[in-house]
Amino acid sequence: MKATEKRLDAVLQRIVKACGRAGRDPESVRLLAVSKRHPAASVRQLALLGQKSFGENLLSEALDKQAQLEDLALEWHFIGAIQSNKTRDLAAHFDWVQSVDREKILQRLSSQRPASRPPLNICLQVNIDREPQKAGADPERIPGLAALAASLPGLRLRGLMSLPAVTDTGGAAQASLAATRELYQRLVEKGHDLDTLSMGMSADLEDAILEGSTLVRVGTDLLGPRNGLD
Ligand SMILES: *Cc1c(COP(=O)(O)O)cnc(C)c1O
Image (cartoon, rainbow, N blue to C red):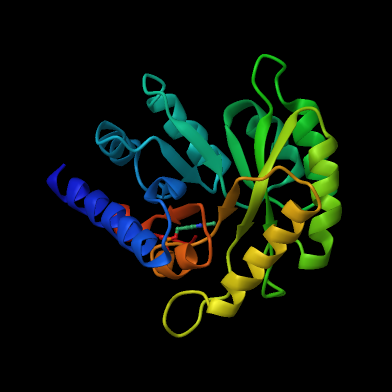
């Protein structure tokens, strides 16, 4: 528990410091703990320390952990690649889906969201550096996707998620973070009621906060190294 507590404190301190440098209220940045490839017991430790939002990128792994943690009121975010045959489970078992990059997935998530639950919170994933191997919509497709997401009754469009290219410093280039912020601001100017710019991870959360991130997704620096592929 001690090690987890130290890591959580250190990450929260980094967020507060970065907000200080950016002249921002620390309350304006939320921490998403990325618990992929870590066991339910680690999630429970963080939850007991007050961390309530967790991100997963594999559906079966996430459902297994959720079942083990049913007694806790946690907020679950899906941040991984989405196959269309998995949307029913995503719509039923998650509070947020941050990795939507195509129309068909928006339509399925909306129609499959159980009527007993509030609209599913959505971030559109943008492939800001247009990396061919990477998920996410190219920037010019984002306005159309946002218009569709905003029109669907089972969804609540909250903002954008980006996973920029990694430079040799281990984090994103400032230009990529700035480009994501500009795209987000253009959506707001078009009239979308957004509050979530999800960018920044272990290596670059300070830079992301300087560029306006409102949600940093941190795995390694909270829970230690992971085994296997991301
Ligand atoms: C794994 C992952 C993270 C966390 O990355 P760390 O470098 O371990 O902090 C954040 N976002 C997404 C989409 C991820 O898949």
